Image (cartoon, rainbow, N blue to C red; front, side):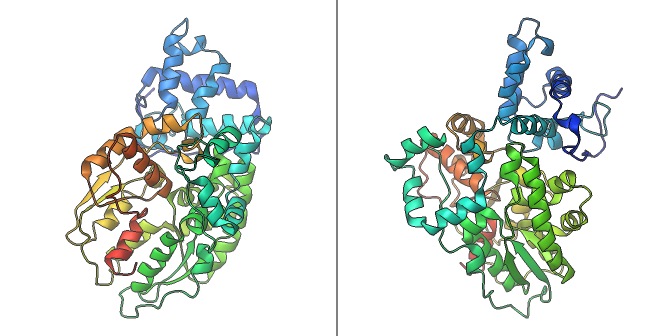
Length: 445
């Protein structure tokens, strides 16, 4: 038996269509097997709160081993996992093809799927995952929704905490009445002199860029148009990650079928597919093929999809970017989000910003602590700040004019972390995504 594996990690399809996947006795046995391996290794002690919770349970039980921990106590470990995949990809020496066959995030997903099937996910949590519906409703009354969600609103935020379980101090995204898909037509005029002229890309808007920050998509369109790339923007549906976080794998499978069914039509017309937010890119490229491995459209889409930073870096390498990038005064701190790292494409956000002339770029490659809805709930927001404290501390120390992340929610969480350290944040430019800085450098914003 090998101590660890030097081979590339491999993942198995998620067997959510098999009855034994939901067998609670078999799940408990697998949890105990995995937790015993983790207890004996402990390399992941500093990744997220799941592992410290597990190790504390073991250390404080009567036997000092996993067999002394009650199964009812495993819920705290399962709840703390944000499905970021960093343990699987960067720390664990026992992932497949190692014979221990350990996939901690997907085991936590299985446990949540059992919980979801048993009706143990609350109504509020289920409603928060309906991002398309919530985006349409909130966008229709955007001024009112944004007023109600402001952290300074002493009337509505305590009420939201009491009724919806959303921490009163957690920063929430704004909504826009005019979505990205509405703003994106007509597309900007193409630079026919650019080296990449003739390329075509369809931008998968994603829920966040469509409803919460359309400027990310507008910036991406503008940058690609400057580089001669014809674009269209579509949003068939949410990628399903919010549902997946709560164990609703069937909803993620349904989303995969719907989105892939539309986007493969663009592939057939010669378009590259570009996703604007890394969580959605990760779903399209890695999670969907494991959830519905027999769906040909999903497999084709996964092979044809780029993250926006990845796409621009690839353009820079071949055939080259259009001229005109200018320095940005004050420098940039860029956070490499976990779901960008989990795509195994390298630090593309940092690589893209390195294209800026005479602009210092400082890179932070560690979890922000946000973790989707996990980062805004009453019971987990304080933990999310704690997990992200090293990132906030480093960002504050850098004192860059711009602080960006490929995950816009992570970026706002880092800003909150800086505030919690009693550091001033007013000097930080209110720009979330690295592609917005490329647009500004081109003079397009």
